[in-house]
Image 1 (tube, helix red, strand yellow):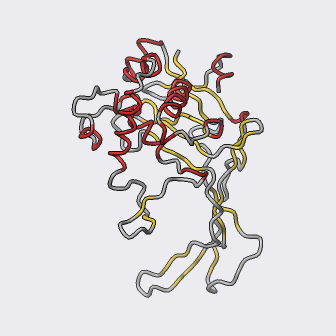
Image 2: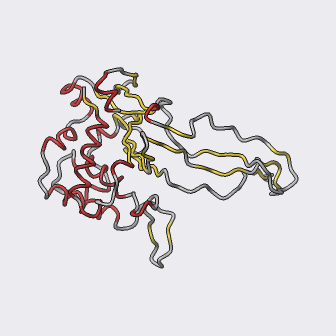
Image 3: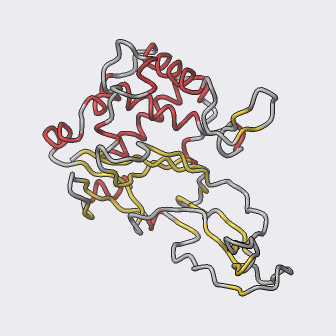
Amino acid sequence: MIHYTEALTGLIADVVARVEPLAFIQLPRLLVFARSGRTGAEGAYATCHSLNLPTSEPGYYFWRDRRTGAITRRSPWFVTKTPEVRMGRQRLDYLLSFSIPRFCDQTLQGSRKAAYYPHGQPWIAKLDTVIHELYHIAPGDAGLRQVERADGEASCRSHGPTFLEEVAGFVQAYLATRPDPARVDFLRYDFRGLVRRYGAVAGRTFRNFPSYPQRFHEVLATQPDAPDVAIVSVPGSTQPRCYTEKDLQVRSFTLQGTRRVSIPQLDDAA
């Protein structure tokens, strides 16, 4: 059995050590975990989740009458917060999630990044995705990297016009250091190939799988004035607001689904 998220964690450590523009990333503050994602389905191959986003300004949801535009009902005032994730005494700043088996079956064919690897092997697409997500991490614990518009103001986009090109440059810089082939070998196999080689594919997940640490709403104890309309409650979050190593588990992934596995060496790694 291959512990896929541990293999990714080792690769990330090697990339950060070899690619100078990413050297600021503090690995003890980052955790890799797996999410379920079918091959061929829509959705991201991987995602960078920031755990240092500030609490939002107070606000509320409201509904308007389609004909008159008048507010007909609203939610209570609330703020949006980020859950805390701790591994031992270390508070984490970032999570990187990878969709399995979708990530494992990724290739360059038909992707925007293919233009930057005209002679690249299919597995380079996965290395590019790993470095792509690392590049979203902003220096100085500033959350996710901001994209600037031509006028210097922050853009709401997550990818600037040169983002993919810069990531491809980091990929080439990493490969130019001639890393140990064993470090990237697992990327060469698609999901079926991994199963044939290792017997099974496992990954670190959170105990409330398929959920994971996500931003949540907290209703204000003191409600400011708002339009005098009917108030409807906001469903409360049932997920933890603080996660620790006790909230981790290891699951085996298949093309049909996942199941919890209890293997001492894999549990210890999680």
